[in-house]
Image (cartoon, rainbow over all chains, first blue to last red; front, side, top):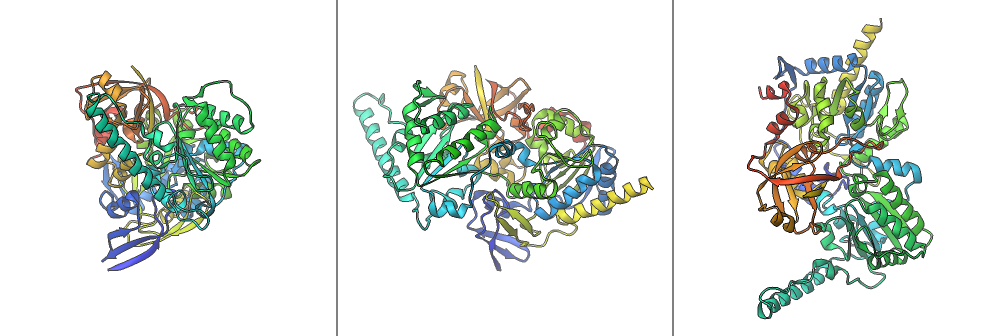
Length: 480
Length: 135
């Protein structure tokens, strides 16, 4: 049995690079150091895949040769006048580069999953900038960590342990001892309340809410964790201070904090469900931090206000830099969504939603973004690479996507593959194929090839290159 | 009663996805709607009851799950995935991003069954090519 070490995890934007994968006879038997998501991927990736190219004939998906599938895909793309090329965040930067060439060749619109994730954050960053750093800086130096509209416990399970509150940094210690003593204290109090309620009032005394305990803040200088969210997530259980905001109220709370930081008085008792005293406490924590860090998630980008919420968060960070060092970073979802934005930007000048129909790259989210071109039923064909829009796009978009010729390159059978006209199986990047990925803090990392892919499953990059060549042949034949 | 529908990731949705979108694990963890216990009592909904979530776009049947984490009455939570997306609006108001958190929804208990992913796709998008795709 071989142990392959320093494997980069191809699941979320944390791109943990300390995984150890145990391989026996070209089969993954175990994985160490991975979170629940990483382990689920490494141990189950081969269970639900399709290894044969499929083409729809008379309504049915039937097996075909790779050449046949590439030829049919190239025909669909070459003949369409405005195809959508979507996905890209779960493949390598090398494959994305070829995808951009293909988009330019066919004059289509190319978009990555940022569009339905941190697209509004990118719009905000283009408006006001982004004071950021690498995750290593945060691990060693940040003494105040704020997760706003983000639940890393569920979406980035090792983020807290590797980079923030539970990480043992050079200048800042992990908070796990404090967290454990709080848990013990909390359960002791709850036990007393239970006994008291049985003895005195027949069960009518209820123990204090969990929030009551997290308001006991640690002494200054020690690392603190603050969570702002609409519900008490499991990440919030870890927090020293949890602030519950009413759904859709993030913009108000962010602007109220900006006012408080400027020493302005607010003539209200609460803002979006948050008592003004709690906001003052949070503002004090932020101003008195030596190195503060704000991580924000889709709670800001997907709710009312979208890019304006993120803009307010970045402006709050900018204001805080008058008093102390404060930085901000989006919690990116897919392992290479940051890479997709980066490759898009270095190739076209724009990070997502790039339209090549005029012969040059054009960018206008709201018009050239995947959701909008599908809602308006503008596209006449689609290529989906390593993504599943049939599961993840709103109903109207999927209805219009399904109507048109659809090519899917994916390593497993997804809902989108099920409704496609051509399905080309590919090797899993980071397991069966190597490549480059970008961590959420823009650090590029190498993805390893751990096992051989099933026969006939090529890496996305090779499939796309073959498709591009065939498209060029067809276009060349037509023009001559 | 009108609710505010929030969608988001959960760790079990993430794990279920890696077991395959057509797996039992994915169905059990994604075709659900988490609710505040008070709201459930008011609507006579038990943990695991089938409920119909209806928005201005359409409706979908999922299983109700009691959640003590949703403290605010009137808020419901569905994990990202095909079931939630059947009832979400595509309008992006010029940002490219649909409103995936904060849409208004109604909830009622139902006798109807929760559809698996394949049936859901057929019901929602009803394309002949989808129905024949098993071959």
